[in-house]
Length: 231
Image (cartoon, rainbow, N blue to C red; front, side):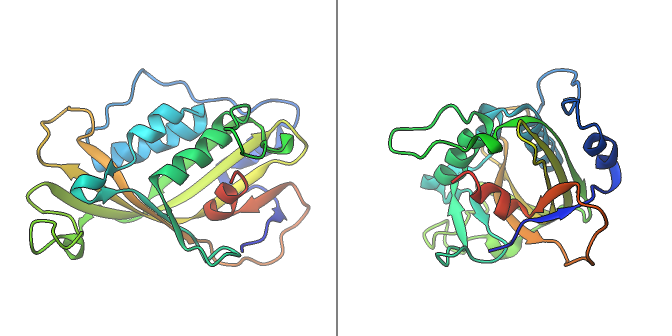
């Protein structure tokens, strides 16, 4: 399991990390996001984290098992239980606990108060263009469990990600790492229809190990480590 390390905040997060007495400001937006392209799926993901919007996040995750389109999150390194991935239901459960820690379901442990968020600033920066993933297509109209190219167009791109999560406790979290994001376009839906584009897979590629940082400021983690805190 990836460990949490204390680091100084880099780049666009420096000012936010230094504003110890102020909450992270949520960026203003012009209205609802129109998810009309693969890149717009990623923009919606950013906003869902910043606004702690579970409905938005859920709406952009593939959830159509009958047509082989079931979202998967691939962890950066296996968990202590040798788990390497989880699917839609677990991703939504984790984010319900992350976005609204007061909503613990029956039988769930409560979310520790030091994981209750006060604000977030998140950036997904595209590194490579979206390219079609022909290896994910079915050769027999989906009978093999893969994606039917008559229904879906599959593309992916690599992103560099950063997220500063300000907590209501004394420890804040800096989440970094590259990600391979696989997006589906539903060819049976018209332009502008809800669900036309959705996130099929998120592979957490982690971040290269860095030299020991200077003065401690916040806790650093990969997305895999961060999400596991809320399980």
